[in-house]
Length: 162
Image (tube, rainbow, N blue to C red; front, side):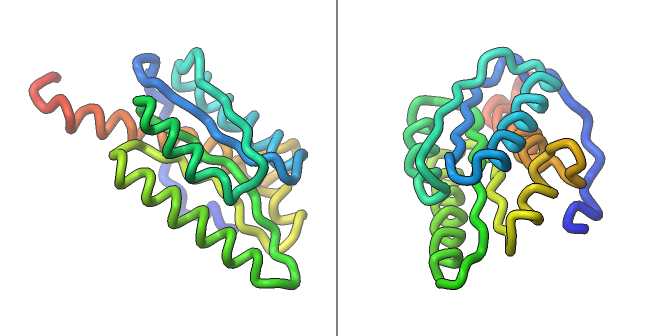
């Protein structure tokens, strides 16, 4: 299972963070599960009002994440799913999304929650979507990681506060 070895984390109070979520529209059932998982993480971390934006597909996640980062959000959670097909399209979209979201994180020094599923088939995606019967909840994990990273960045930016 790909989730083996995940660190044990505990929800912390992140009410003071500005948080956005950008989610692709392809594979509606999987995306609904990922978004619900991210929203559960926001609730557990005391985020009351995350901005949610939808985009056509996973390829569009980086440009919208960049626009959100420019607006001063402390964390941007990017959710999408790409399912392998019979052409190189899978490789191009996965690479573009990964490279683009990494660039947003580094260029803006903003926490990016990487919740892009890259699966061989729909069954793998459903198993990671946080739905009833899924073995993993990647939407929750991506959101929680972004919030923890945003807290760390905030601490580094304010080193004299305890």
